[in-house]
Image 1 (cartoon, rainbow, N blue to C red):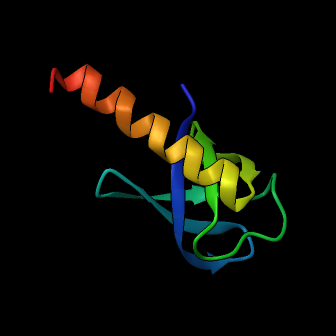
Image 2: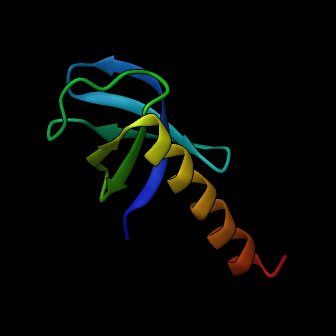
Length: 74
C-alpha cells in the first residue's frame, strides 16, 4: 500500500527523510526529480513514487488522517 508522507530532509540525490503520523522513514528518491523539503509524496516499498502540488498534497494528507482515525476506531 502506498502511503502519503511529507519530505522533512533531503539526504542526498537519491535519499530523503519523510514523515507521516510522527514516524520518520528514510526512502529512495530515484524515481522522482526535484523534491524539496515540505513536499507531500506517495511512498511505496521504500520508494517515492509520486509528488503532489501543495493543494493536492494537503488534501491527500487530510484524507490519510481520516483513514487513520477511522482505522484506529476514534
